[in-house]
Amino acid sequence: MTANPFLFGKDPYARNPFVILGISTPNVSPEQLEFQVQVKEEEVLADPSESLQPSDMGEAFAALKDPHCRIVFELMHFGYPLPKEKQP
Amino acid sequence: MPPSTCLLDPFTAHRQAFHLEWEGQDEKAASWFAFALRGFSRLLRDPGFLTSAQDRASRLAPENPEALAVEFMERMPGWLLGVHYDRSLRFFAAGDMEAARLHWNILQKAVPLAELAGGRFLEDCRARFAMHFLGEKPIKDTTDEQQRFLETAERLLALDPENQMARRGAIQGYVYYLGQGMEDIGVRTRKKGKKPSPLDLPMRKGSLLKTKRRLRTASNKLKRHLRRAMSDGGSLPAAETARHAISLANYYAYTERVPEAWRLARRAKVLAPDDGDVTNFFAWIKKLKRRMRR
Image (cartoon, rainbow over all chains, first blue to last red; front, side):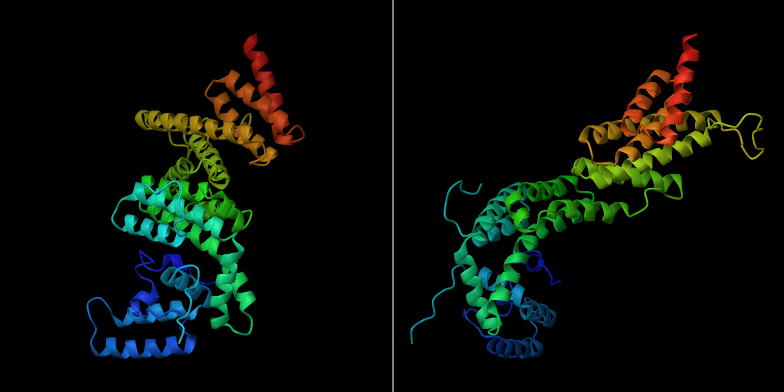
């Protein structure tokens, strides 16, 4: 039984992990996401800001690890239907 | 108010609802939530949405994206409704009945989404709600605990009169409460020849009056719940309803309201004609009624 992603914080849209982690590119692969999270985590650990604490990172990352929740967050953040990838 | 007709993405409408709720505009938020849920129920039935979920699933689980997308589609309605179940539960616990009712009404009205979440979704929510606040046992150790239990059951029924588990708990609780109260004021039937126990201390007059008044209120509430259970037809097992009706009739008989006791006993007899206790009580009250006529 997975957690309900719509109960993620008081406002799940504002507390969307993509928003927390500052990722604005759609179609992020799990590997790319992990890399981006690590970079962000190091930044936050070095200088925790008022808006972002290390615990926020952990919570957001855990939410993104669940594939079902991740689909919801992607739909919340990047919209429906899936935005087309930019042509090279 | 949300627009009555527009092609607004339900996610955007949902986001607006959360935003309004965050600002404390509960009424507005409720209408946006309801609007978004209607949009989601249409979206979840749209084959294009499944394709979109599969596209995303293929990046997360390339080996079996279809299964992941289907699981996601199955969970989504429960998650969406779960928000309102959770809100209702928390507001009820905090004593904010208005807000609890707002979210419970959203849940109740989202029928198409509840169908997608499984046929018994709403019933399961009701059972979980009752279980959370009433627990398993409708009988408590002390009078205060029993009163608190009954107050909670009444509040639950005020929130949702269709909660059969809460109604059953309330009926069982009132029956027990009446029984205990009758013992306290010494109207318990004693077998012929049996002397009162020396431990049966007499009650003070004020305390006796207070108990009698409380019992009268409880009996009125029990009557209301029993009437509802009987008219619902099948919300409670007939034999159980009949036995509870007999308990109330017993209280009526000992407070000299024999015609009411007789009417209730007759209804109980119709509900459970083969029940031994019901038959015995029915015969006894019939005799009592005849004796009174003479």
